[in-house]
Length: 170
Image (cartoon, rainbow, N blue to C red; front, side):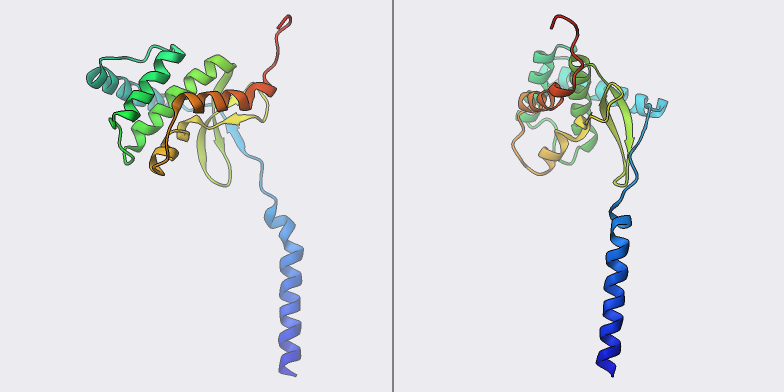
């Protein structure tokens, strides 16, 4: 009799879990919003801090030129000027990378909020295609993985290539 009750209980519990599973797996769509003034200030301050580091330690500055800026980012990493525990500086590198991608791909910065949290992301026009360059470098450095900044730029560009709106005569 006890086994029978236990079996019924387990069966009912499993049925409830299975019936509730689609609702549990369904997640709300992300909320997309403009950068707040605080976001803009944080990003600007972070880039200025990294630029000051590049000027003082490398005698170089970020100019917005893709090749030059990617080279400076790589030099900062290769020379160990930013350590894995320097999250703000690592993310500033991602912001500079993101600014280059935004300009070259016609993307813009937004705040992307979902069940995981709040992130600064690049959005392709009004589509649902996003890049997350802020952490593209930091995650690799923190995991002690090799980082090729130019390859990250190229890969992210290629991911967005199919979603870019083509202008006439291109």
